[in-house]
Image (cartoon, rainbow, N blue to C red; front, side, top):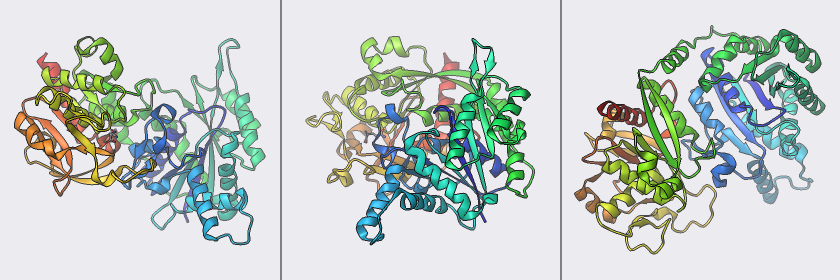
Length: 535
Ligand code: GLN
């Protein structure tokens, strides 16, 4: 029978429940268990796909095309657990199902209510991950204990213990122990109150993970244990990491979390082995090179809007023994200040995915700078589309070339809406989403990086390169080196006479891990190091 771990959060948001859940998943995997992870988000959007990155940060895309919360990115970077659309539920998605069932008459005769109908649907979502190949399911509950919208989820996980027996369940509560400078003390009261809220609902946490800036004294640990009704050894300190988030699992091991979970769930397992992870951290601390890479985007001010891009650059740096300093550049700043001022001295330029016109000219200017100055350039999704527009305008002399996303009336629509998108009017979940095959040209930069010509990558877009212009681009030096297997969709373009200039329609950043950098990111960073050395 599968065991269940529920992770809740208290006191404040942004405590890093996703990272902690991912770390717990990783430690259990390294103990030999087959783990699954999922997240419940209490907001009413059916998925985060329609939300602005300012609201929500990055939308993380899975192989099956699900648009999910960015915490699922942590799950994939820390573990090998397969993720599907059953790994992210929102209040909206749960209610959508309940309401569809009601319309079909599946509750005929009954009054449909939060308890039991909504809570049953939540529990069904948890049970969907259970099968014979799964030992532990980790379910993260988004939001903060005490929020009105989180209540049905907490009620559901309370009931879950009645359904399958408390011995098969562990409740982990993540909380904050603030340090009050004026008092010169750590404060445990917010934690006490948040646990009290949980206990009112009927959930007694088994383990408290305490986020803190400073070391928590034994005296404070004992106090938290007593007031919150948990064992002292189950009060685990998780101190802020100033070096890297990838230190989190190691520090949780140092505080005994993996052994504690194994003991509490009465699991038999092998000893923990995270030697490769520790080696990765040593490598990260001792780089042989340093490069500065510009990420030119539209949502730069939001820390999480390009989360997976930043992580992938870091992973590539680890693989290339290189410290990657990321310069986050607002595209509109380039429009105001000019490329020379903003971009000179940098070793590489990356233009990530995005939507809409704002900032597009800044991105295009940045790409022109990279092309003309032989600076390594990596374009991703909208980054590819902007590279094509730049090339059309400045090399092929198609002065008003554009994407029809930015200008419907352009006389040279070099980027146009995908055929399959023409008749779609709904916004949610209607792009070309998820994993698609791509075939690379032998000998191309992309082929050299991947080491194979058949690749699969995740997508999230509505527009594509207009095939009518392909001949003109290729004749002038922008070569299509990757397409869909039927040859119809442009997937990769490369510049012929340039040290490293490559753009992809897919999102490779969703498939990079700290211990296994994505080949394209690694090759890009390699190119940046070579440029730095030439300088
Ligand atoms: N807005 C572009 C499109 O829909 C690019 C999308 C993206 O970068 N993810 O095709």
